Amino acid sequence: MGFNDKAAAAVSIIGGADGPTSIFLASKLGQTAIMGPIAVAAYSYMSLVPIIQPPIMKLLTTEKTRQIKMGQLRPVSKLEKILFPIIVTLVVGLILPTTVPLVGMLMLGNLFRESGVVRQLQETASNALMYIVVIMLGTSVGATTSAEAFLNLDTLKIVLLGLIAFMFGTAAGVLFGDLMCLLTKGKINPLIGSAGVSAVPMAARVSQKVGAEADPTNFLLMHAMGPNVAGVIGTAVAAGTFMAIFGVF
Image (tube, rainbow, N blue to C red):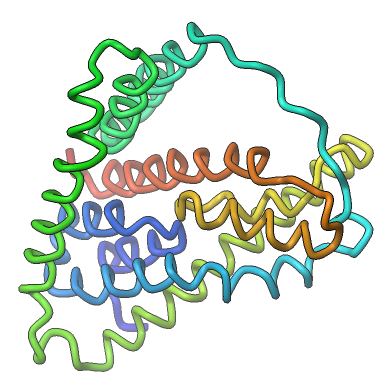
């Protein structure tokens, strides 16, 4: 398609439907020339999740498997909620240090929320600070999308490749859900596999919607949030892997 290795890696991360990670990786790999199209493609597919995913989900599942009802989730203790972000950061950081900026910030927000002792920090990070960062990020990336850099054939290639990557990511999640359904003898609804992308919580809501179409009494939302959060971590790990491959630290 005419892209070098680093550009191809930056484009491929769009398949995780994670806008900030896509921008972060493109920046780290020095692909500022295509950062604008990558951001537009990533955020476009995040918003198009309810349109793109359902046909793939229905194609790779049967009416019977879509009707599977999953059991009640067990209660999670406060200690587990606090230990989870700490353990994830330590384990992922030891295995792939380049992912620490991404995974660490995600887990720091979880720790703020679950600890319950830094309420002001949590409220600021989840509201005012987040909006400020989004405005700054949008403004800085938008400044790179001049007509010369955006209105060209490479932009169309990036949008097309991003769509293919996102479709493959969705299909792989559903197929793995089918495998889990088979291994557990029908205890796992494969629809939750489609939520294994970073579009939180939209992808989980789509799993719930498609499941409810098959059986209106089915409630998959909280089950789908597990793969959804795992997709955020997985996309960060994938970005860190690309950074490690290309020697970016």
